[in-house]
Length: 314
Length: 248
Image (cartoon, rainbow over all chains, first blue to last red; front, side, top):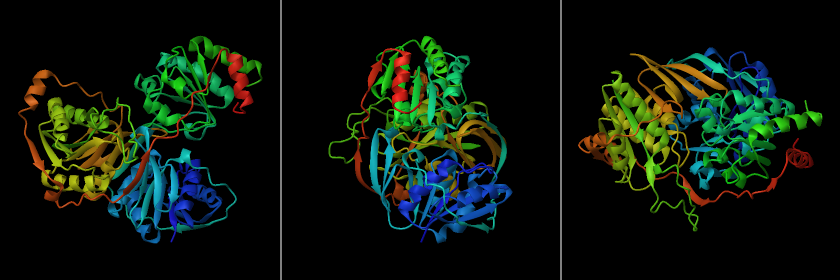
């Protein structure tokens, strides 16, 4: 049969998490189809059709899909599930919200946040905040999987799949969208940024995050935070990097004033190069850092900013 | 309205997890166990609803070994009214948990189920959504705040891009995120009082649910260790290294 990937998008653009999920899907069951469910999102379907290795894009448009609420998405996926032996979604807040509903209705256990496809029914996934890796074999039958996207390479562009419009399923009418507050930023998104500058409680206030902003702008980096900084109200929740926040794996992760709780390390330890800046020499963050700078961040940050300026970063 | 709160007994979040040498799992012998932190937030939210006069009764359920009754007692000490222990000595997978909870919901008829968004042991993040689907109920997952009306609930959710508010018809399932509230510590008098609150004992068979695992765990291993690198002594040296690594 085939595998179906739920596209991650905002009705305007297709997110990179989709490309990574396609890579995982191809290892589970080929060919790969993508479901783009949304409202006025034909451009997203066009983008999905260009992913290499994708055979078909299903486009379901309708008001209930505008925010991909779990209840109408469940109905839609159930109406399609017969044709697929695997359904995968990126382990984003959208994918994690929808997919267990589908698994339950199909009486199929779900495999959450896979890191690796060992064979079409055997997977690796993190447990205990990434402190242990479980290798498990799923029972025969349909596979329902969410994918930790940082663990997979993005499928490349260069495909030319057909886009097939499909009918909307009936909306159970149980839930309605009632508003959102999205963080607006000119910077790259945390989960796809090549460089992340992240701040912890050591920053001392939300105001002091501006010290990170200036460096982030010069490096075209995203700005993240530890749970402690979010809980203290310095920055909004969507900045949080960690096991229960966003899991990231950029080329460069600069942790500033972050002590390095297990839950935070679980969210960033797969970054290629890690830099830790902390005045406490004993901070656990240094145990995973490639380069550690023991320094007062209020001195080090302006110095980095100035030095980057001198070297032509702007 | 009645509120049902499923809670799980898990390894305490401060304990450093050790993988067993034979790769059969994680060493849980003589390790401190506690209520799953997200479930603690769920209990707190339910108790606050009762204190505000919005909930009439808070019922706590735990599925696990006999010691899970301690976890239920913790919830009772926080202010829940009574408990149901579904005794089972082996791990129960999320789908089977959802099936047991569905049967309990059908018997208890709560208007709202509040539980943690994920347990910090298996990190599955499935039970709330699965329960909602099996019941044909709406859900508000990863809750940041709750506005409870008579027939609907407005739930603001922590999503990747920020916050999203959904309005769901009741009955509904809500799963908690970190910032919904800060759970209280139980006072000594309340801990004493909790000892007298009733806990009913059941088994999965009472609900006709087969809890035989459907997954086969082949092995549990330690993650690849990251070696600590070197300390740098100055900002220019740091930037030189990052430049040499090709990351800036």
